[in-house]
Length: 415
Image (tube, rainbow, N blue to C red; front, side, top):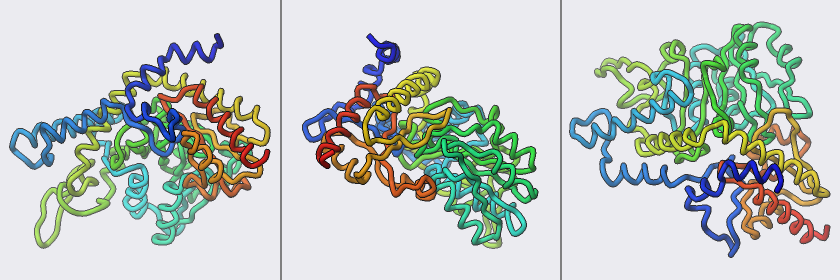
């Protein structure tokens, strides 16, 4: 028996797969092979049950009610904030609930950015950013006038530190906004080194952790992050809930993002005063059920342990890279030394949409296109790629099924 199979057995992936009801279904009469977790991961039953239980037994609006259901639901909602804080090694008052990582980045752009960034200053992003960590800064540039600079990546798909130094050389950069893990290349960026570099140059750092937080433990204090964002739906939780971590002294200085209920201290017709963070940034009724679901998802992955999750996904990534390399006409994209469970590839002579469609007919779910990173894909000289991405429930046999499926796709095209 191979070492890879033995390692997978020790992880007990079959037991984990049994926790995800959706994986038991058939697609076109075939077992479902779900390789699209980077877009949105599937949900374990404990997350589903936590949300259903809330709706069936104690749902009420939070914070403002005096009856027992409101108090119980408020406790559960705030307990989810505590779980997130522990998960990131942050203070609970540094955890802002948002809809997703995208909203978290927009919140920072429209609060910290509007207050801090203007003509004569600059924001730096990398060539590998998701649209969510590019478009908000373009909008801020057009509104406020800061320069937007793009640091290059190497052909292997890693940050070019020589170019980074050049971008910071004139002292104008006030914010470095960078991904923790590329959703196209799988590259992990050296965020501790990047934070140290940004701070040494008088800049703050925002880290888009939407991909990384799923695959490895994140400690915002150890990283020395100023801002960190992620989405619940990629972490086996529900859609509609995400997290912005902000260093407390920065949140204290930031104006509200939206106005309404909950985010105020007092209101009169003449004006209003603001609540303390994080509530200052949580206007209106929050995503109560979704936050509770996120708390359950954090409990779930924490029980498995990120040491085990990371080891399993390294196995999957290594197996995928080796398997794709053995296929004639298939080219994996990106070869960073530190990479996670996202593998984008091209199939010679076949458009990625055709590849994905024909794989779907075999019960294999992958993603195709720009992956919300059009400038990166074009920087790589490509029009699109196909992407396979992995989760705790992914098996090496599913990657083997992908390889078999790709050979069948090539046969359809006479290759």
